Image (cartoon, rainbow, N blue to C red; front, side):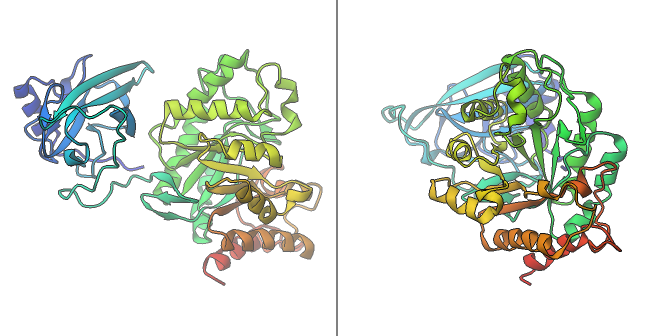
Length: 468
């Protein structure tokens, strides 16, 4: 994710000094909300107590320890900012703020709340009340309309931002057709991380633009990088995960990051530690916007039975609680969960906390993803749906990298349905190739006994995405 330059910050900071507002470069512990009629934030004034009647830039002038700022206008969250200047509606890559059209608010009093999270994890709130015009107050229940485009700043900001739009995804505001591959244990070692990074260009060239990596790995190389209280992550795992995410961002790719895995050591001391682990995992990726979070691999798996006394992840209500925690930490993070139990997937997918249903195909009625997808749509799930794990478990015990005609036909059907349904994405999963030691993420050969590999599947995706 590229860093944005801020060429006008010094000018704005000087103006803040003259207006009695502390500059960002040398701010102390008391950040304040400021406004300016200009997108470059020149001539700033304190927002609290102001009367406004024009397009205005609004931002938080904070100290150097600010990590994130979540803004709310009249009680409605507008966005979360992660780099200075921290602006109410965002800014372009030149640091010019998108301005608020006060005509959209109506006359009367309005308020802005900025929830600040410092780099040490402390939280505080800064508020300001301002008026639009001189008319009678607007009732506080009046809904705030979406901000209109600022005529002074063309186009949206980029920075590899993954978002949900209807039944699909966008990346930097453009439609993003997600095609993935499960590489779950890629942070187990530096060598495994570098092995994955070395394949990203090849993946992308074949139309596969997303990789799935789990903090706890997968069956042949699982681990628990969290402390028992859930408040810390092993720094080496964090470093490796960030490397993968940043390398993906450089290629306009996405990383699906899973938190819990049913076969990994579940060493959390209590339910609060599980909740803390979700906060820790979410916080670790705050600066990186090309990420979708998956709460738990195969959420309904009986592999979680041994940890049910601590936290039963098989209960959809518990999973929804953890999704809520994700959004408390990072309101704009795309997050979801699911498994291969149809009823539990419906309960999760219909929750307002689930931005996306991340389901698996099983070995019975839901072995074919299209039937599962249609059932979930019929049940009222209107978010994107991702089959994060094609039922590759049935390939365990088969020769590594060898695919007979029947097996290829099953995978071919999954690719065809994902290509045909705009709201459905699919992730390639093959246990013998990707999860049996030594784990291989390269494409290898044509998938025959003489030339083992998974290249044939990636070529299938490339042809499907090209309309072939």
